[in-house]
Image (cartoon, rainbow, N blue to C red; front, side, top):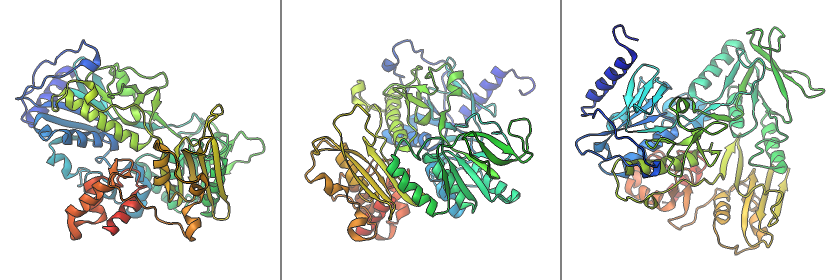
Length: 555
């Protein structure tokens, strides 16, 4: 507290200062909300800017702001955006975090352009967005409609958007607080690991978790020239996406690269260099101890925990928002929370008792919430909720390249035991590390889903067939053969000539959008970087980048 000011007075003072800096006339009272939340609407005074505060400047929070500014041509004239960002730099592509090792340049991952020395980009000034770097939001008062940062700065809002994301889940394993135990989430996490490896001569490390995040972390460790052990509690890797056959093919590829895989592992302690297995000392980690019968300790000098996420809902709890029984901010189809003027998107949002941990659903949420907020603020026409898009769940299909291996799953890839309308075909090539399992209806006339490991060159085609309603025009067996088996080497996937064909699922970019952008940019300007920036294709998970390159070359 600054001497001479109470906390409330300081909050009011900082808010006034911030408001004056934006040259906006703010009103002293806010409309109360007593009606059902979906009937709420904030009436816009044409002489005043409404304040939208986004808590969290990650990928989804950034996308929300971009969407809101695009919804109405004059949005920036009527709305003042501000965003809290606890990291030392603005939004960057966390999905591509392992590629940081290629350049050690954060700007390569930036979502809004080159970072300056302060961690900002020109996008924020150009769009009149207040960026509060290194400032985690720590207080939320929904009755006064204020958000306060760790810095003490207090900002009032008309609409708040929770985009706080998630924490890495760290199991309660004794020794988890030892030096040498890290989580894998930010650029700072990677830098801390690199420094620890260098300073402590680390030659062997364990990654706790064999899911999507764990395998990405294992690649990060391998890129540090450190022997990498993948430790997975379940019997197989990526148990939510693939089955035993897919696991076998994936493990073969991973072990060919020199990594070690340990499944069914029951890690009981992170052992210290002094031999302690509990929390009684702060000696650096030196081994993993297992409760599996007959398993010896695994000597490692570093541990990376990457075995899941927990929604960051502590601020929402302080603000009195409704939370799920196991965490997450409860939202409706508009991504509106229990407070009518507060929305939640991304990994912190709980819709229909489910947390969506992939980037594509997060971007969908950002789009839906942006239009709902725009309507509340009077930026777009249409009084009926039916005029607006709604979030009713998301397609969890995914295609990734993990440790150099194509891994994809789509549709109904692991049918439930009581699902009787199922038949499947399997391609298993252990020599070339290729496994494919396609799930059809019992009559074989409809593709329902599948698992692709080692060759996902026709993922887009198969995904489209599974998501559509049309019956198959060819024999199911015709779809099973991997593209690499037809021509010796894996083939680059092609996209239909139909302009409406989807190329980028993360950002819903079609072939027509890409072609138009390439033509507008011209021969000299149509570089891969320019096309990605113009259309957002390839800026999510990156799985579609080869397709974007193919279309660019063809045009």
